[in-house]
Image 1 (tube, one colour):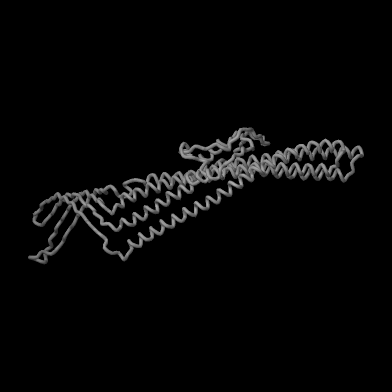
Image 2 (image 1 turned 60 degrees about the horizontal axis):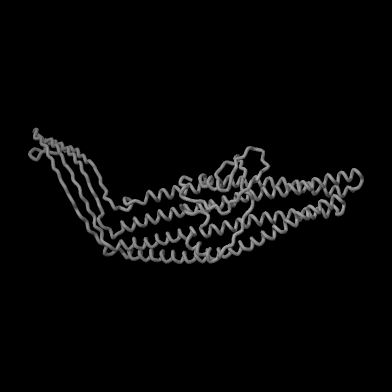
Length: 442
């Protein structure tokens, strides 16, 4: 992003840690903070809205609204040949050659137009602010997408690790049953069950590798990087929990939510539109001034030739006042007023929608914190249960079916914990976006 210094990334959900991958290809280390910076630099939507903002900046000029006069410089040339009958003798023809050259300079200046020049300039300033707000919204949405895309790739990697553990356990179990069959202490049915479990876990592992690859491809797309670029994500898949106050969050949202702030700017534009419409009720005064120089050459019959020249100045004023135009001015003012009132209603609707969404995300965040605590406790029990079951299975205390049940419980519990972490990050990121905390202007 060309003006990336305009923003400061609020690093609230960045955590340390190294996550390794199973890819043998040389990889670039990528932290979440670096991913955000790369994404803002390469993202096409960010670049597009930056160009829109530059266009609004260029357009925000006094010359655009007609504060300054227009000056034109020109040159007129007249070359004429007349061939007409002589009044004394119609049979004779009279030839007349005329050459005239007129350089000129003209100034046209609207001295007064119902204060519309000043109001249009203020409107352009608002449009520039509105364009900057749109650019900030795109940056905010891009940052949120990159955060979630980054952690989604980590989530899929962690799922792959869990499936690798289960697959290895299934492989050990299958080898163990094969050995028992060779010494005659296991029947073919138990071997087949172990084999089916191992093949099923191997299939799930391979499919999960594809999910990891797809998650990284999506991350590359968000970062604007080609698919052949391979990254090693250096942030660990974990999150901290925070305690928020709903009233504090609501105050932050009402003052810092970028969508709402941009809507306020849009409302100012609508109000300015009403003032601009009213300016048509005032008279206009226009100055038209300039100078020209006429130089002529005349070739008359009987060598009666002569030259002429003149040097003229002029300054003319035009005062006009629209007395009646079918009520168009009055209707324009009324239409602008309607648009302004609609904008006010849209702000009220947006405030109510955001307030409801904030309460929803606040309560969801609280629930997901509790779900994560439960999932972590369940994971500790599942890991301990897996260790005990593995020892008991090797000692012959439990059969292969019970051991498989313990494996599936471990797998499902691990997935629930990983999903709980990602869901909490998702909700936390949304709370930050709603309260304007993902990015702040420098």
